[in-house]
Length: 149
Image 1 (cartoon, rainbow, N blue to C red):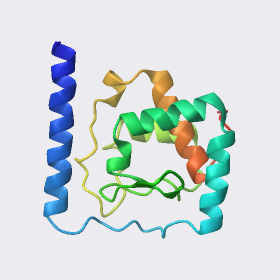
Image 2: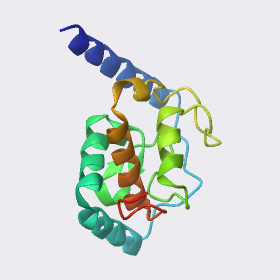
Image 3: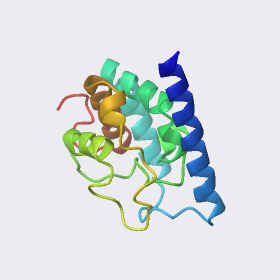
Image 4: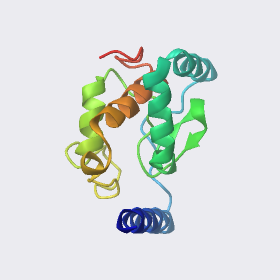
């Protein structure tokens, strides 16, 4: 019961932070334009063909509420508080894992440094964090998109 209460409190805080960020004005624009229709179609194919790790990563991405802040056109995620995740360059899966567990270490210019929770490493098992990062690679086409790495 205590764990459920903690999760509910965290969800309410995340929603309040998101609402406060939206109320402060327009969300920052990603320096990268949205992917082209061809890029979105290719990302959908990579996600569909990505295997169980990519599918688990998509489920965890959705379950953790990542789509509320980050955009991935191929899945309909349209968040605007954080950077787009479907136009990433050639970051490795490990780079994305690091960005998830240490979100304050490398903040994209123009975005608030304190919006992304810092407790994912404590709340989410390592294999699920790696799955999320692998899903992001499949969505963006970066290195590791095939589910390896």
